[in-house]
Length: 259
Image (cartoon, rainbow, N blue to C red; front, side, top):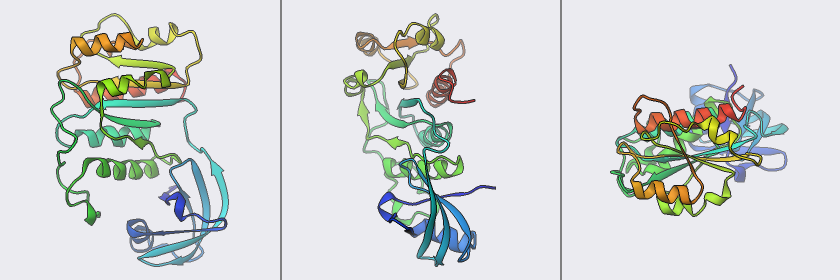
């Protein structure tokens, strides 16, 4: 079975790289890799390194770089998900599965009906991360994204953006070729229809999903002013995090990025 390890770009030199912390402990203590073993590292910026281990210890692992490859297992089209943050730990699911699917970025979204605040603490710390005791949401989600990137054999780590308000998000709508906003009150317009109505090439897509109570009429009006396509995800009512993953999956599929 292939296994990827994460190395920060600033830990990579011209001919060798070094990792410490939890990643070094995992390589040395859990997987019991030895000097001379061939392993693969990814730096989250799209580069994959095939390496031979030179020194292995619990606190640091050094490897000789044999080859480099760019953008392996990555989507050409960039799909970003702006997800209204649900209660509890359900955003963990969005980050993990969105990373596995191939999202380019994930934006924790705050809307008029959001019940989660940016400064709230999340539930228990992640196992193995002693410095996560306070449970800061963004740091937690970044760690989940790193783990999901390695598990899914990606080379690009999705950006986990800062908490963003709905109106601030719309101010960046022109950065995307297509903006899709799922709303359970919409019954006619579909993602396929939105793509068919787009006359230019679509390479960057923003998917927007609201909280359990949905978007307000004011938010929908603001989105339409920015030429967002308000679409249906079908007749069944979905939880917010389910809607986010479904919309992202459909977008990637329609863009030809899921095989």
